[in-house]
Length: 146
Image (cartoon, rainbow, N blue to C red; front, top):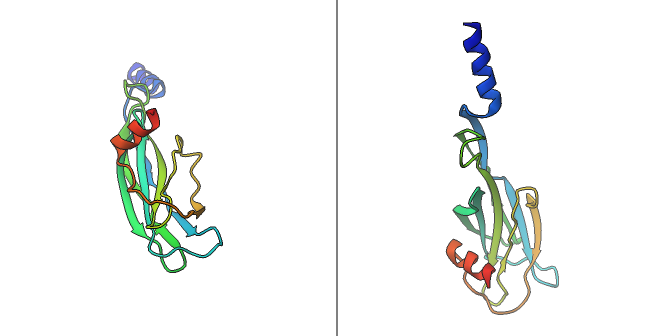
C-alpha cells in the first residue's frame, strides 16, 4: 500500500496524471475608445478575441459596441478544465487581443502573444482613415506572415 501511495505521488509530481484547473478563458476587462482630440467614440465595434497555445488558435470572440462615453466592458469567463502538463500538448495557455473598428477610422487590431502583455483596462485612440473589417483568425495569421 505504501509503494502505491509513493508511486501515485511521484506520478502526480511528474505531471503525468491529469488534474482539474479553473482557467480564465476571457478576463474581466474594459476599454475606452476616443478620437485624437480625446472625444469618446460611441458605437465603435469592439471585439475581445480569446486564443490559446500550444497552437495559438482563436477559440472565440465576443463583440460589443462602445457606449456614448466610448466605453465597452467584458465579463470574465472561467471554466473547469482537465490538464496533464507533461503530455504531448501540455497545458492550455490563453491570451487575448482587441479589434476595434468604426466607419471613418482606421481599424486597430492588437497582436499580443501572451496573457502578461494584455491589460484589463485599456485606453485606445482611433485615428481618421479607412475602416476595414476585423480579420478572422485565418486571415490574421496570413496577414502577419506577409
